[in-house]
Length: 434
Image 1 (tube, rainbow, N blue to C red):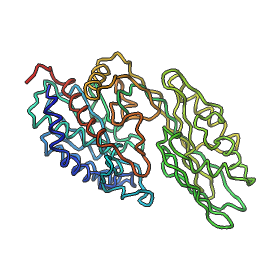
Image 2 (image 1 turned 90 degrees about the vertical axis):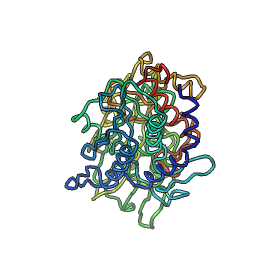
Image 3 (image 1 turned 135 degrees about the vertical axis):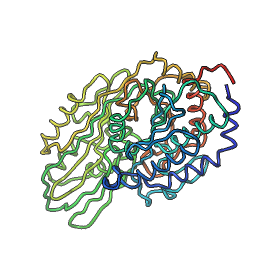
Image 4 (image 1 turned 30 degrees about the horizontal axis):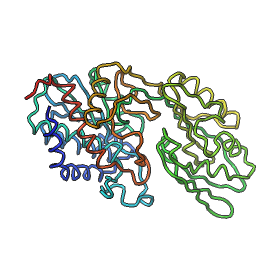
């Protein structure tokens, strides 16, 4: 139903979609110090991005509301929704010096859309909103309503959704374009642990590496008695450290001094090891595969050496078990834990109505076999019962998510638009034609 019309709509409105995405990408919505007195719990950039989203929703006839600059909720109709589509308008920071083109300017070249948030998660957000716009303009009649929820704090702990759920509840079916196609129904558990210890060294006076615990650092700057040296690597998402080249562990691998803290970290985090085996882990299971463990932050601050670790572990393990192991190893080399944030693994059965419907949509749009997948990345529905990720990328794509030159192929952006339009129809319509 409406297959040809929806495809034609994309072709005829692509320039308009790119112009809208350019406006949203132009807003640096990475986390800034909150300004609660101004109603900006996640900073001005996040609030501006949410304002843009609400304005667009209003313009296409959705019933919108700003929930205290935590999320924008937008309903198709004024009745309880059976489906929610959850995406986010905030992004991780970007260093312009590392990009080929400015990170907050949309650029299209060689069949790809470049810009911070192009794949995570502004591009998919625009694709979903234009899917709704398309269905409105085509006159598609939905028997049931759906709700878009666009948040402003996914990259810094999902406090936006925690707040939203104190005000409203999600329907039984929730999807997010914040993972991978075909359907991501299983997500590893997550531990983000920061640690520190007093640091004094006759040679090294400063270390600067990593600003986000969920991103592999591409630079580690070490200030020593003989000057400053930068160790260069390649950034990657924290859940996929094998796609990057960790600048911190590169520095540690070359370190030949006698500082006990650095020697200990060198032993626990060998360069090129991604599964935490040297920390006493290296676990895997038949559903989620092998775990990952990445040292993504190492900075000297006020006389202390401060680090941060990103761990993604299989569904047959628990937060308590994994955090106990890594804390024990860190304490053994002289560190203490400062903070530990964790999430247990998330799993939705493959035979659920939502999953089976989405797999059917995937097969219709892509022409490929639809199968469930598991990943280490935390999607926006990780803590939402029954929620699954549906897009926005394909597992085989190397799109530099969270890194320099982040991009989404135009062909994948098109598939996003088509997938969400058809998913809405399948889940919210009686499908008996026009």
